[in-house]
Image (tube, rainbow, N blue to C red; front, side, top):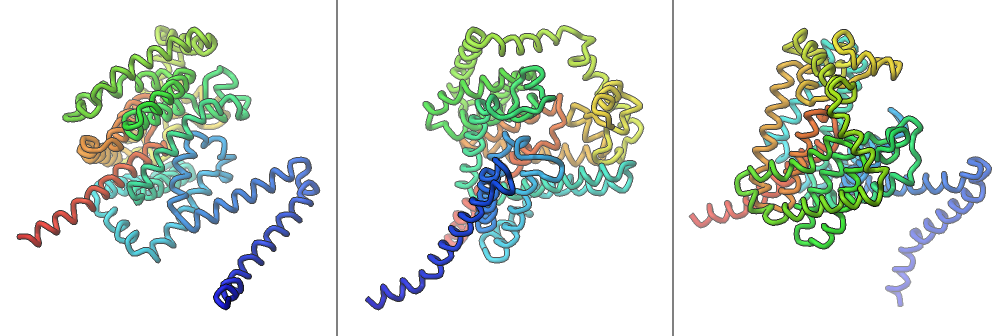
Length: 468
């Protein structure tokens, strides 16, 4: 009896705190309409949910990393502006939580130290630091500073994912696959900005997301699920395939369709990987063809969007296809020729290309500000960061694939991640993907798997040394 009494006394503060919290929430709910109108209860619910998530992240930094990955398909919905950014808030909380965990968790600190011994991690760091150094010679230092802060955030994202243990990395990718699958039907429910591609042209993109980038996110989720996470759960994979294929097709993105078709074929040239892909490639193409046929017959409006964009490829002079891309690429080449070694500085491509590219001029006039992109990952890096930055970036990609290929040859998850990297490289031909978050999630995933493999091999090496 005395033990029960002592336990009850120890629980009194917990019960008392829960009671006080319930009273406070009830009082706030009663007066919420006075401060927030009819939306007051919903605003209060959002504040409470955000507070609960923030508290959970501060207690466990891995939750923040998982949420950052899962939120990628809905990034435009939770980003309300340059400052009111849900992704930045998640990243900041995760950073604080990780810093506190490093002070108290010896194993995590040792893993963090091992991470910075990997050449790939050092290559990412060197590339980001060169972006920061480019502020010194950038003409628009404010834009260069903004770009540098963005790259520092991407470095942090790489570290968050790289420090995840294998089981948490699996959860991160499972969350990404699930959220991407949910984002396809959600795109038709979520409110769309009036000037979004989905509102204007009907091209799929949740909450105003760019259809081209979104289609490639869907493609990466598809390959990660079909060839990686769900390799042993083929029924679930086959059920998700039509959703992903519809999502890619409905965006009307030519790059997304090319990546969908070309990625498995390119992966077949990797030694020993063809055996891992095996018989799953042919059913994927058959199922894809069947799904596209059904879309054509059942949803003519989506088929019209795709056919219209594919037909535009024959219009050589169209600004939406070859003429516009050539103008943009020629502008980037002129910028590179004028600043070959150091580049014009991070984030300064649009301002530098104003004198060389008609497309950048037209885009800036449309946006009523200096705006534009090189629409090619290599040209974008070379024009802004010069030959030095390009060497750092190409070296980073070399180390990335050098590390990822052996992992993919032995691991289903590694296979899915390597296919995602191939999608990212295809995307880089026509888009400036050196600033896309999913690319750095892939970087971090390769680092996490490399750390896992090195930790697994270390005990066997120690045993061998003791035996000898």
